[in-house]
Length: 246
Image 1: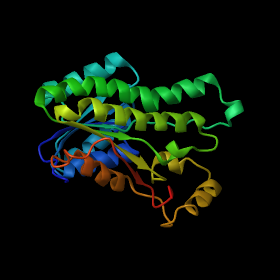
Image 2: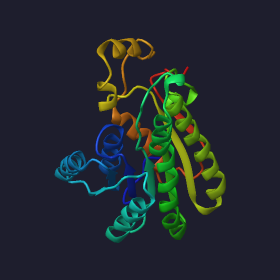
Image 3: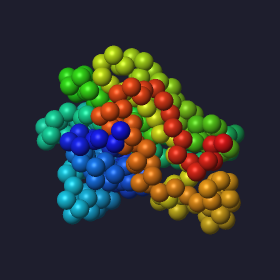
Image 4: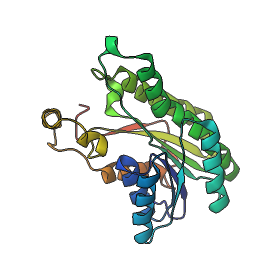
């Protein structure tokens, strides 16, 4: 179910971390991959690295919380290769705070990046998928969707991703479009490296397999849902967390 050969995949937050890992797995397996991100330097660096590997990749600077930028980015991809076959909604951010100290902006910004962006990108991608009668939406949620101390904003957004995914699955199941979600645990990304060493060590001890995951491991889960033969799988969410969700 990893047959993504020739598919056009859009990966948001594709400049680094999980997004770059997902993009590399899809590209290595033969997909044409468009990276969307609002960090131009990191985006160009990843595009260059992937191009040097001989993969088909494009990059577009885009703030995925802004509807006009999202629509423009998908139009560029459509003009280059055709409309998206696969959408990987990966863009995300955290801004942790104890609940009673959390500011409205902390709430609004995290909901925007982690949930609103997925709504906007799905609205931009699905019309292209409907034209083809084929589409694979893979939304990146998180183990935090189960609830997380000091992350009410992030957990709420990632829980919303699951509900969005299920709603998309129901609405478009008869149109050849599937929608599934991957829920990563602790992954070796800049976000994880930004934590204090004492916190990282403590968190690793909570992972049954005894290590953090690699971005490419999330990529392989995404490729499973994105494959051409995965048309009978929709509305599902899948933890890739080393057992931490148990």
